[in-house]
Image 1 (cartoon, rainbow, N blue to C red):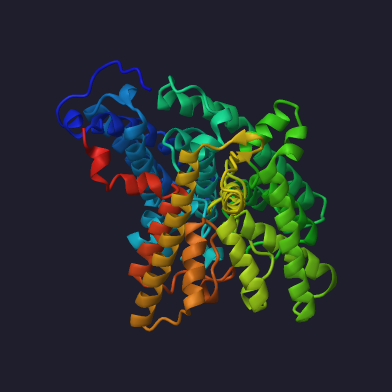
Image 2: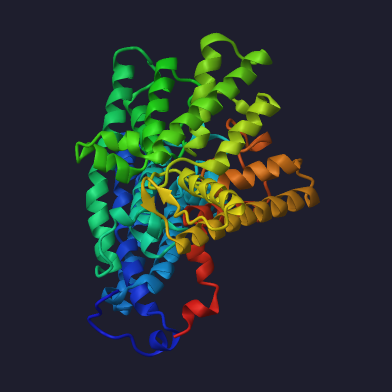
Length: 509
């Protein structure tokens, strides 16, 4: 699979995993995060705010990455086995170093557990927050928060379309085999090629939304949509992150702005490989032929109608407001964006059930959204139908196909295992949060604990109760906060790359 320039020695050979090469690659990648701190530093200078927290964070990050790279070697030897360690360690370190500005200069996030939670929420594009006063953030710190989500979104596209399929995580090797280069290419080469392919598309969609939102502000359609707000919300939308510099998310903005964001949330929840084929390849027919895309739109429409009906029947909202808020929050939850145009925490039990049911579904694989992903549900549904048909006709041979391509049995097993793992981790997280909250006298119901666990594991953001869309996760204890941070981390990496590191077979030569 990998053509090595040198063979690993010592502990690396004994373990069967080239730890030195993995660390060398992690160091070489983490140092580039330092450049990201320049953006909020420039914002700070422009608004007359202190830039030193970002500059110091950048120096520390660059120094760490360079130091690790200097004392290790062998990233050219990296293969699939080392890939699990690289992915898991890199994402963890990015969140840790991304928390430095919060620790250095943000009083609300001065405790490491809170700073890492906020940073992990950004880079994992979750959008949950432990901030009690979002509006109290300095402009530069608030923009760093938004920018972490945008950076995380870029990383997720590369992770989902280049790295995880080659690591055979959750059946992705079958679902994306037509998008992958041949197996003779090193992992790092695949990452570079994929990044070049999709970065332009990602930046282009961000720029388009920024231009549209800024135009709404300039023309007076939505005076609250300043260029700063347009930039902040464009970063968060394309990453399906849900962070907002506004305390009440999208609620303060005009109806037109909310409809525009609905459109871009749908775009962000679409498979980027599909969009690349349709736009760059000028083959718009691929959208109509793609099962996941068609079923996703149908599911959004049906769920929106149910939510709107619930709002109208219980007189929660009426007329255009019911339609707009029903569609907005349905799209937001299914794409795991987490924006809110209204406090759905105060809506009916039916709407809560539908919205958090969509959290488990997720949007398209190959998008910046989180959760299980719709394509896996489609595959499992087809598998169930095949099993029923074969029960009636045991002699029947029926290959399972998605978009006309056969899904091999190994990939089917991987998908089933992933879904069981996902639901098990979600349930375990909910139990820990519920028990811990009960022991500490924090009022959390079983459904609220489950909603919090599902939301953070799925990269959605808002929960229910005090952690609702207009609330904060700040009341949770440190233990619960750490568990919820771990859920964001596991969910973003799709669990398997991290769990593999705890198995003896992975390290065995």
